Length: 73
Image (cartoon, rainbow, N blue to C red):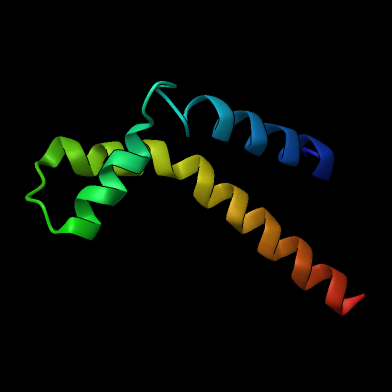
């Protein structure tokens, strides 16, 4: 089983690479702005949100899990 430190390293590296790709203007930011401004979105835009947002979702999951476990201890 993967230990806790490896989970954090994986999540941070995934956010810095896939989560912020391409690095000149991250797709995730562009897609969030499209949603916020109510622009029409194609199926590929939803795939971009899932692909580039998954590392961020995993990082949020680890943060919440860490906070909950520290409150229980």
